[in-house]
Each structure stands twice: as C-alpha cells, then as structure tokens.
Image (cartoon, rainbow, N blue to C red; front, side, top):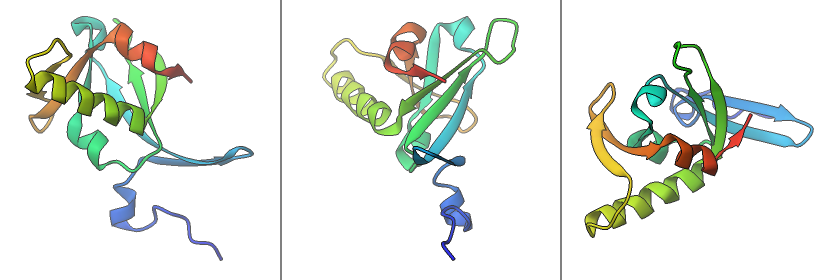
Length: 124
C-alpha cells in the first residue's frame, strides 16, 4: 500500500492541500490577503514561501466588502525567485517592491502591488 505524503506531523507542515486528478498529483500552500483591496498590495510572507514544499501557492484576495474575491495560483518557485530577486535589488537600493515586517508573527514580507502580483499568477 502506497503511503500518502503528508500524513506525519512534519510532512503536514510542508503544504496545506494535496490534490490528485487525471493530470497528476499536486501540492498547494493556501494564503488569504484580506487587506490587498485596501492597501493595493499583496503581502507575501517570506517564511511561508521559504519553508513550504508545495508546488503552488494559492492566494485568495478579498473583495472590498470582505468576501472572498479572486482565487489565484502561482508556482512556489516563481514566487520564491521573485522574493530573492527583489531582496537583492533592495540591498542595492534599486527600485523594487517594499519589504517590511508584519503579519501574525511580525515576519518579513514583501508588498507586491496587486496588479503586478495578478500578472504573475493564473486564475483558478
């Protein structure tokens, strides 16, 4: 019997969802940004992207009335590479996305303008 990945506590921290279908099995990390419509930025938490082993990050961007709005996915590697690129530019004082601290644990996060973020994603 084949063991399902993600059934141990340490493996469950690697991703939020595992889905199988005719095209294969994929893993997803799920994020929700309740403030993107008000701030104009999507807050991408560095720690969450760095430690996840999911193939895709799924973002739910709330509508102004607080309801779930757009549902988008982006390959985790694409988002991780964007954070690394941005961090290097930031260190060289080149124009880039703002890096700040915030969220539940006051961790580092990159604030990506909503339209720039959406252009890198695909809708679900």
